[in-house]
Image (cartoon, rainbow, N blue to C red; front, side, top):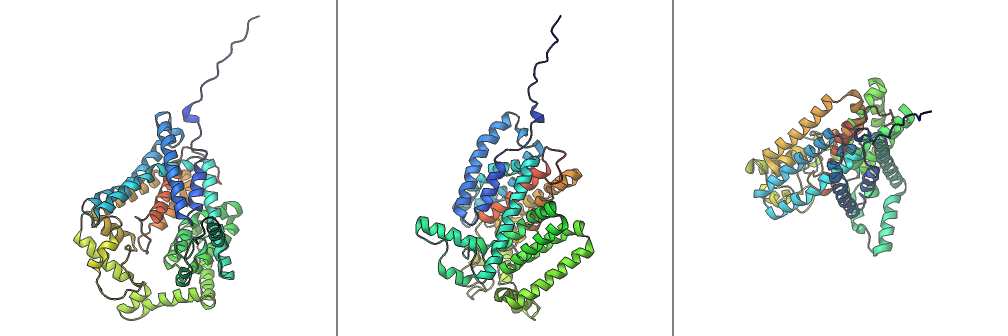
Amino acid sequence: MTNSPTTAPMAPDPAATPAGWRWAPVWVMVFVALWPAPGYAEGVMVLGALAAIAKLLLARFRHGTRLLSGPAWALTSVLFVSYWLPELVSAFDAVDPGRAFREAAVDLRYLPFLWLVAAAVADARGRRITFVGLGVIVGVWSADVLLQGLTGTSPLFWGLDSLKQLISGGAMCPPEAALRAGRLSGVLGPCNLKLGPVLASLSPFVLHLGRVRFGRTGWLVAAALVGVALVLAGSRASWLTFSLVLLFSGWQLLGWKRLLGVFAFGAVALAVLTFTVPQVRDRVERTAQVLEIGDEGVEAALSGRTRIWGAALCMASEHPFNGIGARGFREAFAHCDPNHGEIAAWGEGPALHAHQIVLEVLAETGIFGLMCWLAGVALAWRAWNFAEAEARRRARPAMLALAVTVFPLNTHLAFYSTFWGGLTLMLAALYAGSLLARDRAAPASA
């Protein structure tokens, strides 16, 4: 009797190995959750970048596509270069070359971190954890704003501030800053009035979470929660951003008639909050000043933005090719201020940035910078057009978050600042990683 032949076990096929990096979603969620403490968030980002260099570059020489698909590597890197190369070129004759070159050198840390972010959503498991985690964070921060509106105190910020005082003996924000805030600041605190734009930009993830878990009802509840929080936060630019999110995420789910009902409910809620919350009433009254005849009404309604935009156009015309240098706006403002010597709507001191993405890019990085940004947009759009329907579906929350963040017909925070630049680049990496993920048949809840 002969022994039946045995087949030696086959070595695992690298191409069949699941994509992604098991701990990458944790890095992303910790990075976002620590935004109320920017120094710690920056530390997590740097550590993540170092970890990504060690893991991703080594894996790149040994079947790196197990972490990211080839197209995802390429698109993530190209989107970073579209952001970073204008920054470098603008430094050569910037108003402050030393600072400009330092900023360009330091911002290289973003690239390995973006590879880590893209790897976090490179498979169904990582994408589910990351998107759900971001949705939970946005939901908790929105609920915290509602509690601040009811009690006058943000429980999350109070907890963080108490912890910091216990550790270091100092507060996260001076008491007088809270008196100057003029709006609800939530977990970020009165020294960092960016909660509205943050919630609006990340809102597609909480709407996605609500829809996946509870269908239309979950989407509606999430939309109401974030919408009320944004009105209380008082950032009018975030109101427009969230309106775009509702429009593009709701029309397929609800249909046009139900979606119109959502906007009608939002208008009623805004009217009620206008009559009951002083901060909201102040924002609405300021916005209504745009209807007044004359430049003064428009300037008041836009909180001095027209003066800032005039200065940005001056900078762009005087430095057309590569601009005044990234983050050089405050140094160049006095020279280009159209109302030099007059007290500005925002108070004393120069404007810190252009408050509008196209004007910021033109003023600080010139036509060269604008062409690089447009090239990045074109490549991201081309990847979307050539992607399969399943790839578009799994990347839709990240795509929508990125699109509304850079929507040009709005006012913006500074894209070449550490905080907002890091958020925008993170969204770009989430988009590239999820659109060009290796798994071809992800489950519907991914």
